[in-house]
Length: 356
Image (tube, rainbow, N blue to C red; front, side, top):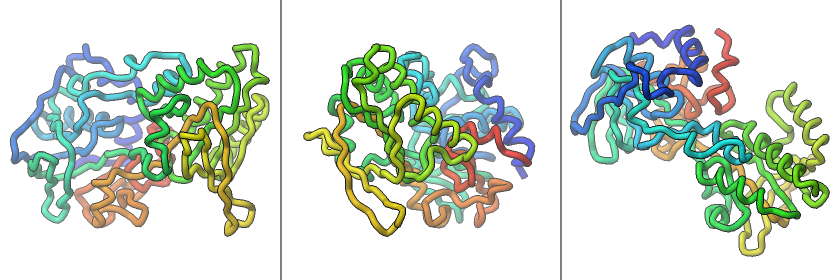
């Protein structure tokens, strides 16, 4: 059995941000092999080349040797998404957040640049979008989560209009900074969804960075900054929530709880929120005019994972044991990262607080 032990995963992930896979000059991370063979087989197959899949593939490529570890990942570029927040705040450049995917995998890892189409867990193989059948002894699902613009009416169109932006997209982070810089006065509105979200601290980080930009103009009193949070707390960790409440208060940010974004009327520049009162059965829709709107969109597991009902729980996340990361039905399948139904935040930083 592959060593998915209680020690391996946290030890390796804790150093990922400084891992040599982020340095293309390292001799162990020269351009990896790719494979277009329609029928392939691996001792370990990993679905997803994000932070989780990339780190795990490097570890096991060193352990198992050439040709035994394969990664299915369609993206040609790997994005270090935490940097997008700093891009949105004008503190870094977007080009610094990306590197060619093929330069980051371990040299003994095989990269399959394709989309996953279907899982066939009963027979230990997957089918890709180009109809490749790839067999495995062990499978790790590391597909992350995906933004769901379709869950907010008008949001997809709104993001193409002036002043509506999101750091959850690379180009959106650039637009966030440019939109904030152009705003001379008015309503600046930031949102937080009711679903699980990638890096739950990011919507507040960009809000504080943007508020600082407004303050530096010398006209802070000309900006009305609001944070409409679908939850009833500032942050899910109580000790941090108290601090964040004080930060928002000190910065003059109005915080509105139980405000869930459901529609953006981009033609009239109005954001519509479903608002819950203390009585959870009572709801109303409230309009908020905006001049600047930063949206933290709803998220879910990717469609191709959610559609495989044998693998997921009722919420659509990979159904794994929280202590071993092993699938509850298929013993040779493991999950890691945001796509799994683990009781952690959906962020790489969660690994630093795991205790075994």
